[in-house]
Length: 432
Image 1: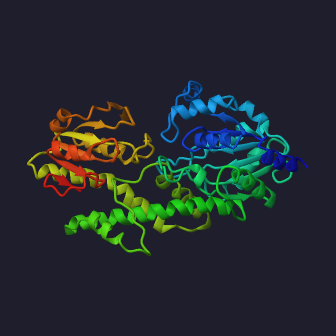
Image 2: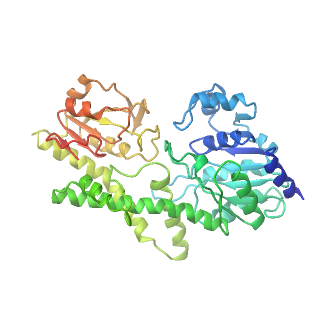
Image 3: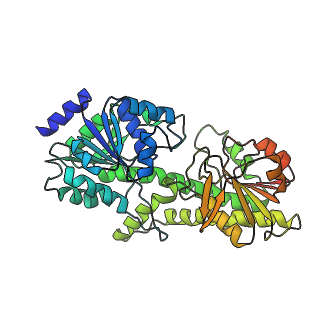
């Protein structure tokens, strides 16, 4: 009966939605839920972020400050660090980070903290949906027991499901409202109600048989990208030795209208998804005596790319009879991805650290990231003007932000190592 009431609340948009974690996933979800006329309680542990939202200031690129103003103006949105307000929520979404440590072991402490914050406020007839990327089985093996410590039982007293986030920061072609959701509940009723909820602000969701299937779906999506990016990075290394332009080869291969999808080399894999998520599966697989060699090999290849970039910088300077030690290196872009202000697992961090260890004097420019700390050394983004560029012995392009005029950069710089093919000019002083 209580779950029938939740169905009616979803249909009438009177359900209250609680979202734990107002970052790259949670904040766009909050906006989408408000657009669908739900009341939204956003729980964010960072008091700084809560203050920003209350002052109509956005801290992610996918949502503008004007849009935050509009969200607040609805009167249906509250951002707070007070998890006790979740007692008002009918549907609770967990959208917290799921990092790995230096040994690539999953760190579920954010999920655990979020789940424990729900348990005291969990009520009969409510629904909890985990969106954070985890290993197959996590929803049932890890999240469910914590929620049931409330005295309520999943499947009878409350509903529990997993629906992987599919947010691609700064992808204007595919905002959240255009991306179908995959949904797997611990019961058919949980699957159906979670799908009904998401259908109010996304395309028709795709239902799978269990949370495990939904969890594996997310990992498959990111493993596909990890393996293909590592393959093209490895091919890039080979093309460098064979004096073949990998970018020319990719453009040629793209002309095939079937059976090929372009991936591009770069200084390494960054961001939360590709660099992290597949290793949740490799960790879990070992419980079954299975060792996913493709995933681990792909990770190893991509982990080598920052070292390769530094080696290429050394090679470029040597051709000018210069040593990396004592040379002025200007890094263009430190975010892991074009046109976002996200540093998570960015290859630039490792590259800058290595350059400094080898004696280079590093400065950087990134309009999205004004301040940067690498191994306790602080940096400030410099202005990208003629003097800054001409003073550099080497310009190292790591992120191809649209805000940078790469044609002008090529005219001013004396030597460029371009890891993104951003300049797109075959000139003697540009190494790709």
